[in-house]
Length: 81
Length: 81
DNA sequence: TTTCATTTGTTCGTATGTATT
DNA sequence: CAATACATACGAACAAATGAA
View 1 (cartoon, chains in turn red, purple, orange, brown):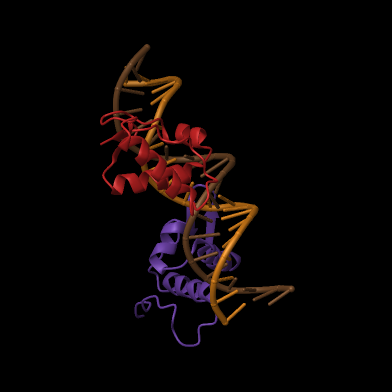
View 2: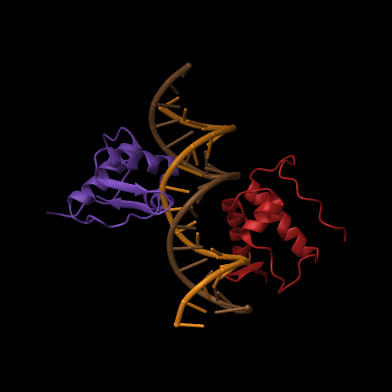
């Protein structure tokens, strides 16, 4: 099991930034880098780290939430499921 | 005074979606379904309800704004005038 | 109780790219 | 070529909830 490659929104074949971001986070979860119960950085902080806007972060998290990979609690944060 | 017919962007004689949407909203206001002071759903939510894109919603609202039927406040919403 | 910082939630404003007519 | 329409994306501001001081 290797580490998840660094984030690169310009990778070939990437259709949308939010989808690529969701995949990247999903890979980090699958790789065990992000463990159940762990709290992700805030949405705006995540946006800084990934170099994307708030709306894009939220879309990516929407995807992960639908997959049951994360859970978001208002005013608390988003946690690995 | 009957209710405003359901929204149908495919109606005969409709030139443009944004114009038809503006007419539909104007009819709802005229019918009293939307009363002065009432807040419309957000632009994106309106887009969902009408099955149109954000740009189309904004064009429709532009028409109503020019007619003085609605007023839009940044980061607040659009309200019936 | 009040205040404050943190975080998610919501909304308008704007820009870009693609497809269609 | 121009206008319409769609989807994505970034930015900015405001609002509400939570918890700690």
